Amino acid sequence: MPVQSSTSRDLVLTLMHRGDFNYIAPFVLSLKKSGFRGSTVVFTSEVDELSVAQLRSCGVIVIPFHFSGQASRQPLSRPWPLWRWFFSTGAPRPAKLWLAHAVFHLYYRRHLLYLQFLDQHAADFDRILLADGKDVFFQADPFAWNWTSGVHFFLEEAAHRMGDCPVHREWFRRLFGPSFIESHAQRIPACAGTTFGDMAGIRQYLHLMITITMQTLELDKLGGGDQAVHNYILIHKLMDNITVHENGRGPVLTMKVMKESDLLTNAQGAVVNGNGVVVPVLHQYDYFPALKARLMSTLQSPDRIAVFDTVPLAAGPVRAAA
Image 1 (spheres, rainbow, N blue to C red):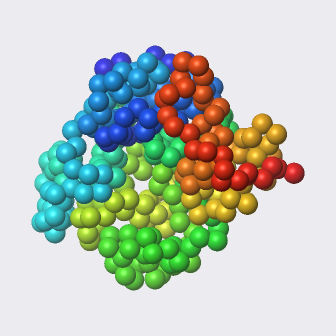
Image 2 (cartoon, one colour; image 1 turned 90 degrees about the horizontal axis):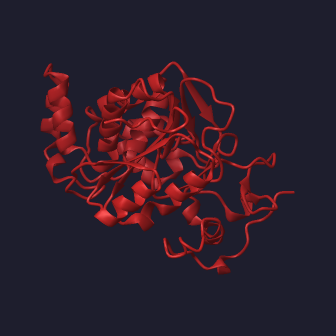
């Protein structure tokens, strides 16, 4: 299937399970408005035909796949010790990948889908962004920054430590054992919701995400546990060419644990870093209702007024940059 019809060799990959176009409209429309001229691919499962048509009308390449569970639930993963044993054997890798597609939760399976796509289209693209579809908003072309080769990881807020977060503690305990989180409790977590890289780096990263997931201690009922695998790669330095960005000092701002008073905006209402530069990618912006409403309003037009609901501005302003 030909996919490279855009004017650049940049690629954004995301995934959507259930929901309608409203679910992913801010992602798609803000990316389209940002000046991005690459290709956008959305893997869809149980998405209605109208929403698929709306995605395609925005220039999105839609690749349907089948997933019958919930994002964080996959009944076939319950006998995980058996599957883990099989993954550790000398069975052919295609057989292991086939089983992984059947038993991985959606958070883990997306890496299988992305890698399969990139293996087929390695010659078509140079730079890739892997991003969550629900809570990412683009204020500028996500690739218009001082790019370097390899893979780019993005830390959360410096005050947020792995050991202080019950969710991170649970992810790491279940996947890698209690001693792992205790050994790294003071580390700032890197967020798995946004990962940039060149083709070689992202393919290596996805291969590691899949291979490590196959050997985790536990997988059942762990939505979002791929965050632990993502950090495992970084902690153990399993890749040679990794760039780590402090939050707010790169092209991504990871916002969930930030305070609203710490957010800066310019005269146009765009979120900026401490130097007044517009941050291209806002991740988890939806935790700030006033900011979300403001961002949604920038996407409104007479023919698009009912695409999604905005949140009232009553939550209070985000402070302007000095």
